[in-house]
Amino acid sequence: KDGKLIVFSLVPQNGIGKTVNNEDRFHGFTILGKSKVSDPVDRAAILKGLAQSVRDNQGFVAACFNPRHGIRYTKGDQVIDLVICFECASARAYGMNNDKGFLLTEAASPAFNSFLDKKKIKRDQKDD
Image (cartoon, rainbow, N blue to C red; front, top):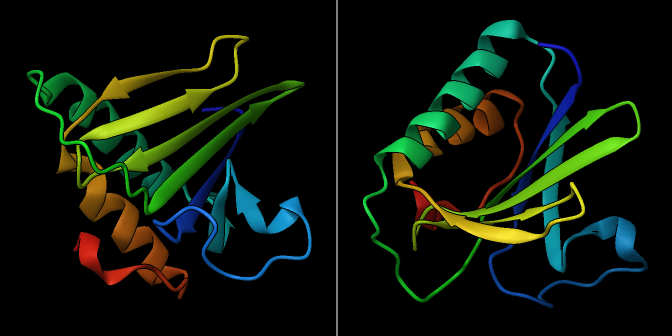
């Protein structure tokens, strides 16, 4: 419940889009937009959906990794980033001195997309 949560909308192809510095990128992917999640209802929907996505995956994964979503959790000096591809059912986690990937399902995609739409943040449309 505490800590800062930010959701990112990403361009799924690495290196697409013009940037001036790394502020325009999230782990190599161009940022279309981002917003802090301050509403407790939105926060609960996103985190519940994400947890359900991880629980539901039964080993399925595709080989694409075209992430359209990202999330950053910050509490004090601890930062955890997730770069998420619902299309291939995988994500990459950064932080905790242990960068690694994990599998999920598209169960959280509607919560992420609904939040981005509510905040009027442009997003790649393939992941609907």
